[in-house]
Image (cartoon, rainbow over all chains, first blue to last red; front, side, top):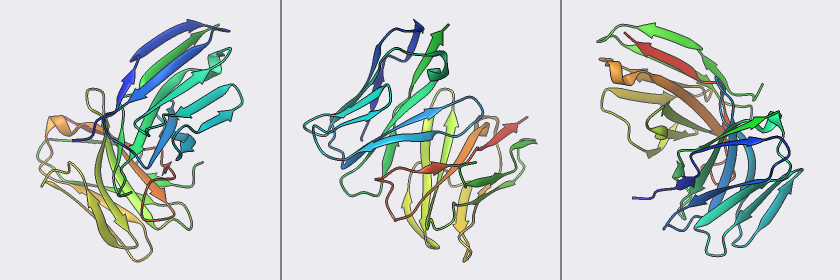
Length: 111
Length: 114
C-alpha cells in the first residue's frame, strides 16, 4: 500500500520566518503535486514535479522532487499571513492511474 | 472559480437515507475523480471516470456508486447513509486519463448525516 507521510502536521510561525514541509514515501512516483487548501474550499494546485531532482519556484515557494522520486519538500521564504492554509502533497503512481494524498501540513502564519 | 462545479454545497440528511452529489468538470476535461475528506482520514480517493467509463477505483464503499454521463458530468450516489459518512466530498477533473499533472478541484459538498 502506498503511503505519503507529511511533516510536520502542524506549524505555527511568525510572519517573516522561513519554513520547510516534507513529503516522504517508500514508493516511487511518476509525478508529485503540491496543493494548498483553505477552509471550506477545494485544494488548489500549486505545482507538479515530474523529474527526479527537479526544483520549481513559485514566488517565495520552492518545491523540490527527490532524486529517487520518493519524496519532496516545499520551502517557503519569508512567510506571510496569506500563506496560512493546509498544504497537501499528492503522488501519482508509476502507472499513472492512482494519486494518493498526504494528510497535510496545517500552516498558520501570525502577523 | 476553478471551473469545476459541485452541487449542492451543503446537505443535511438522516441516517438510512440516500443522496446524490453532482459534479460538472472543467470545460475540456474528460476525467472526473471523487474524493472524500474527513478530519481523521484526510483526502481519500473514491473513484475515477474517464470519458464515461470507470477508470480506477479506490476505497469506495458498496453503498456508494457513481457514474459519468455523455455530457461528462458525474454523479455520486450515497445510500443507506451512516453517521460516519459525514464528510466533505470533492470532485476533481483533469484533461487526460491520469492525474499525473494535477487536478482541478471543485468547492466540495459538505454532507452531514444526523
